[in-house]
Image (cartoon, rainbow, N blue to C red; front, side, top):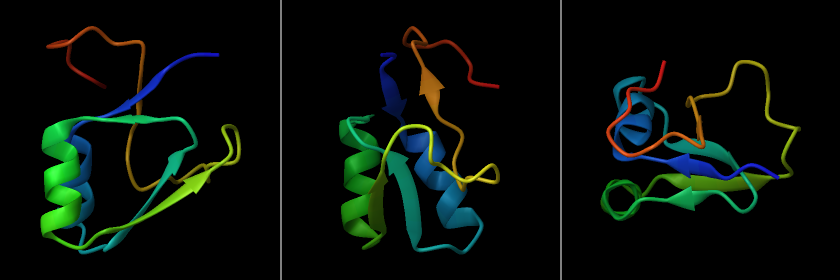
Length: 72
């Protein structure tokens, strides 16, 4: 199973789109900065089973990307 990481840039994209809810896979790791943004903006987080995310997911997720590597 691959690790999934949620970073602050992902959460900022959700905020910029005007949404207040994000879906992330169960077991995803959320960075401290992303957590702070989620908490401060009262964003609702819904955990879903891996593989059941909608094709048009609100955020792009990073799988096994080293720190500092750009996510495309």
